[in-house]
Length: 102
Image (cartoon, rainbow, N blue to C red; front, side, top):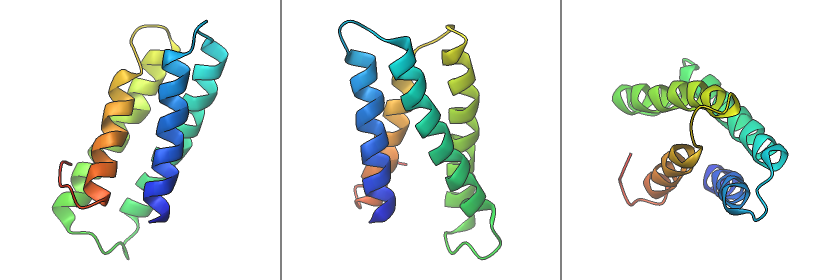
């Protein structure tokens, strides 16, 4: 799906930025900005009344969106790692591919 491909692309950039040698905070910040935009757009779609996902799944995904946005700020403040953001994206990708994990 389009969602899977987009999340995959952003997750790959985020993961590459985390593992880059030498580490570049600017590269990580750019990847995190893309990830933030992704989660903002997903949250908007999930909150739209016409969204066809079951209510429970929508609430879970909205919770992940909220956590991702808050955690992005924490990482950009230098207080935590972005690893969990990669993990969240990978879990959502598994869910989108039918390997339920979300």
